[in-house]
Length: 435
Image 1 (tube, rainbow, N blue to C red):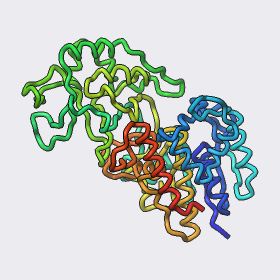
Image 2 (image 1 turned 60 degrees about the vertical axis):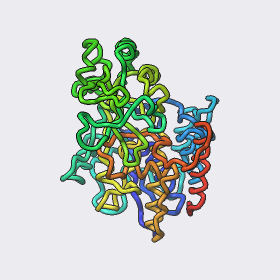
Image 3 (image 1 turned 180 degrees about the vertical axis):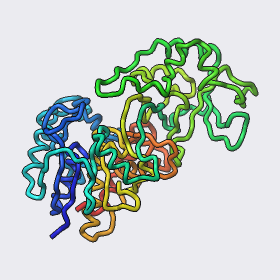
Image 4 (image 1 turned 90 degrees about the horizontal axis):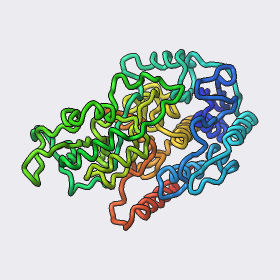
């Protein structure tokens, strides 16, 4: 008889993982603390509950999350099947009737002959056997402490208080920017985006008056104390940013030979150099406001944001140091993590992590070689991002085309290029044995 797998957590990642294992004939014990104990973010007894929005985002193949959904469908995803059955009209987005969607997931899981549901809070990690931990960003205190015991020599958990926006390298106007480090020390690691005094004044005016996002009730209202948002810094005076993150000292513009009035610096965020971080731009502005105001920086006038700046509390693993590309704990491969606790951001991404982790675990239990989803696929790119040991300041990430290798040939138009990347990804996926 096939070895039993314990899955902890029945959110999107845990439900998907349990389903992928069970449909391959592997017995699963799914442990879920609801309804005996509820987190501050949940309100029903259903599995796979959506708490923030009824939209699973774009369903178009010109969008990376649309590609990720199609890959999941081809992998036999339970979450995508239930979303399709309970879809509501939302233009090009995949939106669902939240209660019907979660009820369908719950019914499928509870009636599957290979899945046994065990209710109640899990306060310790089973000492033996195969375990998938998919407890989300609001993992209970008791289980968080148990997770910490797995990694006694590591800073195992990060608290996602603040993160600056990320932009794709291809979308930066390099005619308006240049590579250099301050005082030309070391290698030219930064992209420098200059502003004249007139440009800075206009930018500062809009930044100080821009709309901030609300703080959700289950987040820590004191989360900003250790890291000041750029808009709050700006409100302390017109010149404050010029002595802080926009300081131009030691940065001569090669076009003029002089220091600009202000400089926004961008730092490479991944080994491939396809994504750059806006240094010092932790922000609590609403996403549309970030795009509107930051696009006033000349080099970023057409910037493509793969992640907007965010400030809220979120618990996640330092995954590049702790997990491999199969979401397994390095050196303790019987333990697998899935969902937002791994640093994937978003409902669809959480589902994808549970799907890939379970498919790989099933193959290992069946004595088969791993699939090794390639980087050209969205699922592979996401898994390789969270396990990339070259990432220094690891932060949660949505799927985006910046994580996927470029084509190597020119395709006219951004939508056409993205559609071609998606076409290539599905070709690569079809080469894999997904059974």
